[in-house]
Image (cartoon, rainbow over all chains, first blue to last red; front, side, top):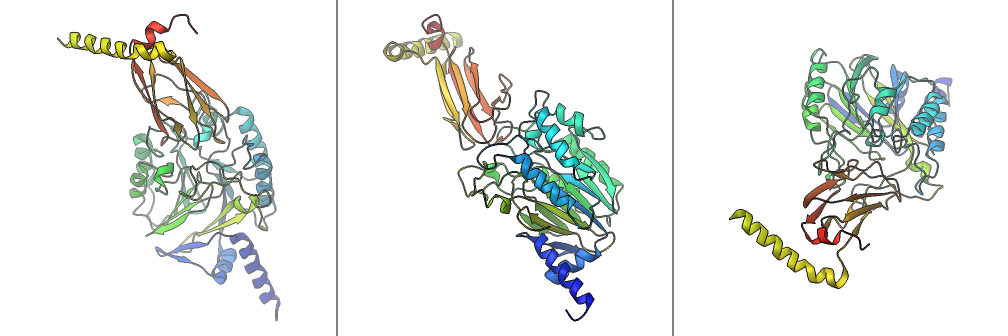
Length: 312
Length: 121
């Protein structure tokens, strides 16, 4: 409090604490991951040149006990985005936009997400491809610049983003699946990228196996990850499991986002992975969004989770 | 020789099934519940011509899809049902296209249901 600078620093740290919620903040620097303390978070907060958001699993149309109004909690999420002091560059949605792939559900999701005023990049969840056309509705809306079942890549803020689809043509007894056509496309897409370019991969189902008995993994995910080995900074962002799970392996950081609709149990903690009912005044502790700060050159990628209950 | 033994086997099956049918009737409809992300029962045996009715009792949607394409439901929300009449004997593996770790099998036996298919429902 002795000077104005000290006051600003403290406020920034407190803002970061609010954002961190129950999640953690990871950075990758020189290939070595570090969990940062609060001072480190403050540095990331002030230094990050490029920020984007991740929302996931909005399940518009869901109206069961675990959350009778999934549209309302999506709108709350978007309100938090609008209230952010620094405007993010864009948003990604890692799938299960809708609950049953109905046109009305896509319409409601679109209208709510548009309120953020941010360009939004989507990948489908398995709930988005169960229309009669098996994903036709999704592709008609979101697949205009995509290949195959909806995969694509783009460059932003010095990083290369790759949106993948691992929810179509699933096989009995299997997990998520990318398929040979998409794997060949990934290999080709990455060929022209420098090893020093930060890579951000996003897909609905986790690309690494979190819990096989519940199908929480991707059968050929390791084949995709092997194509990413040569890059110095790889961030893999997923949804599907409605809770935060994260790990780092070498140069790769893996992170799954909370849902904006309802929580699911921890792996193996319940008879099934179905929607988890919590006390209504606790629901917003389990829902939220993720902010990612991407460094341009040789500085950290930071992932910060916030709950709907926390302050933004 | 092969055809003969098959016919003999079918005859035995029919013979074995007859007293059961006489006692309580061949099952014309069999229910399979979908709950806790599993088919219950996961294994169902029916005579040809019988109907299987799946009911989703979960708070999550499921799809009932035959691995070899004989049938495919639309997305079943909570309380929704899907039914399929199995006319051809054989083994039908199926799974949930949304959650492919959910698997089941319907075994359709020959003859037993065929004769009983007419009329008496």
